[in-house]
Length: 126
Length: 126
DNA sequence: GCTATATTTGCAACACAGTTGCAATAAGAG
DNA sequence: CTCTTATTGCAACTGTGTTGCAAATATAGC
Image 1 (spheres, rainbow over the protein chains, first blue to last red):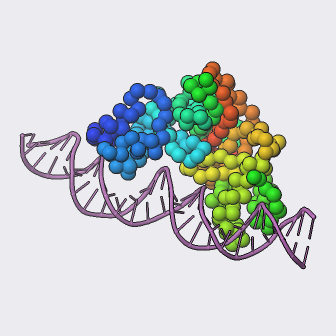
Image 2: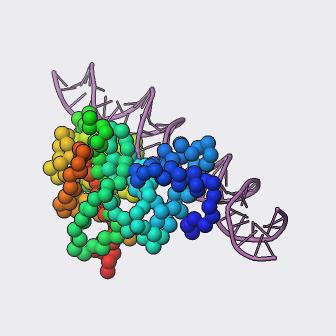
Image 3: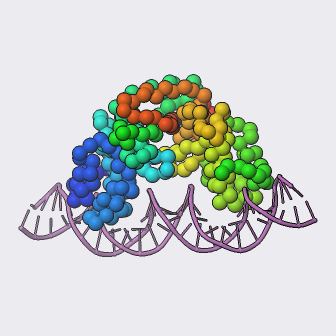
């Protein structure tokens, strides 16, 4: 159904994404909002914001869900396909501004693709 | 520690992977082995087989873990980086024999990458 | 500003994948 | 065959995410 009303919970949640295009895990969001917003509400808002094309999500290899702001997506579809980079040292995840071309595969129709790259980030290399 | 002893549970588990290079979810393995092998044992064997480079694993976007046979991997590392294709109709997941080149990223060291492609498979297109 | 109403929220209980501790079992070296 | 130690099963647990429902609240219309 998407976001209809502008509530305090929504503002608090969106302010977490204000400063950067880094991804934030659902668990981290729940933790940092826990004195103001119930975890059920956080999950529900995240779902709706994803439907609306405001956020996109992906799953890291340890099975927790991450969200980040979209660029150029809408409720009609997520246009925004880019790799995500997870630093195995500090755990930080961000979106890479990078084109990765998936070759088409005979006999299969591709709808979406997710690329998760793991390694060591800038900060942790030094 | 890896696999040391050849047990009945191990044989039963490996026979599930005998016929194809399709991926099988941990949940499906537990279900199909449940009258012979305890689920804890299945999880433990899968972990160890992955350490040994016999199987590789990845997470699908709904948060469940999939395993498939490796080609050319060993306990020293998973050499075998290829995309996985999940059919959103029938749910089947398989490994694609496809090179996808991840460009190197300035200031970051890449250790591994996972590519999950979702779409419709050959069988379900018709 | 007030009222009506439909959306949103919090709570508690739940679902379900995966993990842990520990005692019992069994592989296989000698 | 015996002994050691890896492996297994069980039960209880962890943690992420979900659901039903009653209470709270945003906002459209007046």
